[in-house]
Length: 257
Ligand SMILES: [Zn+2]
Image (cartoon, rainbow, N blue to C red):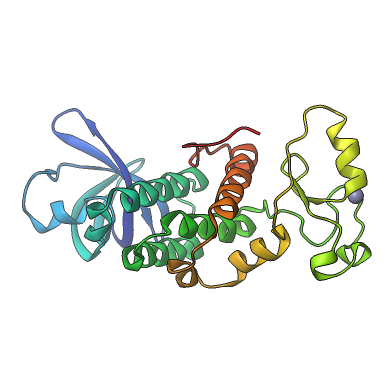
């Protein structure tokens, strides 16, 4: 059977007989691992469409238990991503993350659209690439069913309103171990177990996370975070994603507390 689908290359590896396995994230079919004989170095249209950071339409043959990419053509090439090392590294982490949260042949159209939106945004951005990545990760948490609790203390369930309003709100800590914000009493109990991973950011973590989740990705193309805020978000997300998704993409420069 011949199928057509839009997709983006997540990764590839060489196999025997000058063939490659291309792992694509396709809009209609989800992640697909497909073999191909299309030569990487050729100048043909199909070869260009199989490069990283390219949004392409694929024509594939679907066999009984395999896919083969027969031809492909570029819909949009985000070639600018490869022209800046930081941009390239961040976009590569994004692809690794998407690879980590998708399963073969499980359609994820919303995640697909968000991935393309990310490619557009990171191409336009002139810095703050990691901020875009944090926004992407936070936006996917709901889809993955691992949204942190931010409406009450994650352990005792007391609503936020019990802790005061705005700047005076007395629930400021975030427990990676329990998966959400945690009140002072519960934090003490959890810390006494000796294995708790609790962060105490200098800013309102609830407000910041909600902002990242609600605002469209393009907002973050220009958003400059204070270095300590960025560092704190990175540390929390890094540990959170490792714990709940077993993905370790933010590993560079992690500071252990
Ligand atoms: Zn509590």
